[in-house]
Length: 143
Image (cartoon, rainbow, N blue to C red; front, side, top):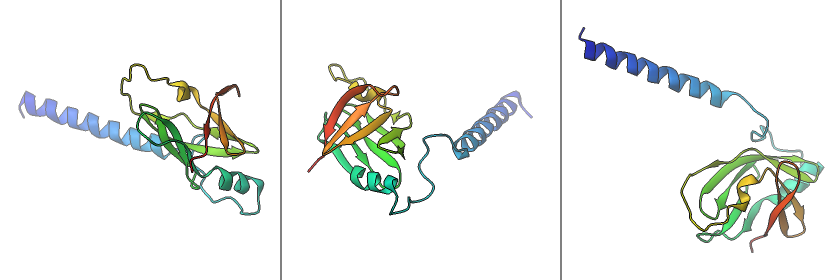
């Protein structure tokens, strides 16, 4: 077997191993993963989810917004980069896992939402907070 072919086989095996490792990492559960079951409709958590589901902010280009789904997922934009994550309800506070995000450079865009780790509902306003609970800003419910 030629040296070139042997090197190519080694690279292929290394890539296969990397994909297997990535797949096993994705299969493990971590805090902040999407809920695995639908909350009991009579529970307080279900009432919070019902109020939370929908679009907050404006989905127009360049505008920060978050859209919460009943399945525990969140998508949106920080005004520049697309974001996606999961959430879990903990009483009146909703905790968000770290965002997966695109990495576009956006000069002049205020990326205040980058630190979001929790949200709380205040009527038709979504209060955005960091991990310590400090308020970063807010988004109105979209009509």
